Length: 217
Image 1 (cartoon, helix red, strand yellow):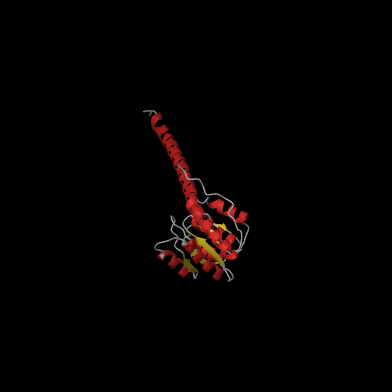
Image 2 (tube, rainbow, N blue to C red):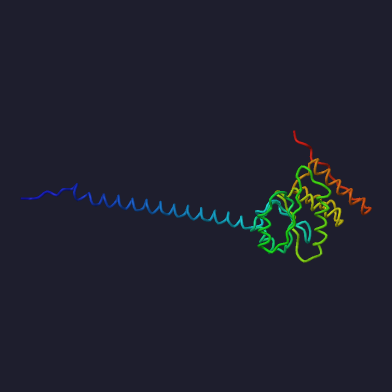
């Protein structure tokens, strides 16, 4: 008896092999995409973490002169980095419970001083308290960081100290101030009172060269 070849049986293994090969290629390609996506995601997370560990993430950081810096609220990491740049004194203008920052600065061996400034009612007495501390440390080794939450208080206080106490260029101090914020009528009036106080005490004629920011609405 002559047996007939079954073409469908002989063709099935080749078809199955083709499917397996195609499936393998698909899974390899998918794995490569997943690996690439994972690498990109990890790289993005690494970049974000690096940014968080840099001074570039510190709000409104300014180097005002050779020994004065100002900024928004620093983290412990920011304070450690600032110490590496020569900061040894920290003036905090935020009122309220400052236990965390006291702990951070103590652990980093940074000199800490708090001048609690009411945002709605800054006073000449606040600034005189600030200036008394600045007068004590400005000639010592190390730089001074003045900070608040966004560096609005800080920029105003450093402007005033540079202009009214140190006698620096008002135009340059104003340029730094305006990079951070334009003082509103309350703060402009306060700053004017400070300048007038120092003019009367020192017989000087320092003048602020800007008007208050207009009230919105």
